[in-house]
Length: 119
Image (cartoon, rainbow, N blue to C red; front, side, top):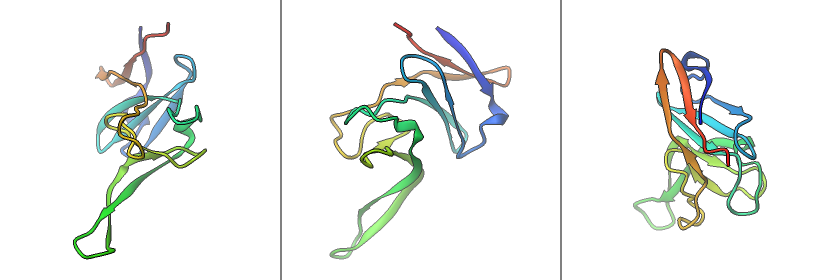
């Protein structure tokens, strides 16, 4: 089922709204002008993942023991156990075999529309 969740201007880049759709709600994120929708259910322990911080992550740098900060504003960190989730794909960085459910998002006449199967 399709739902108009907010005006696009109400979710600026870096912003998010949590809407009461599906079983646990859906977080709708604006990552640099592109909208993404994720279930509010962490695949690790069932935590309210969309209540976590939007951040970046670290990767190994070029020198031994060096780390580099990357993907700022693209990573969601679960508030329960700090699992990191890629907002753009729903795939967890902590365990790439686990994912958070994602939903199609479009912008129509200035409205952000999310398609959620509510079964």
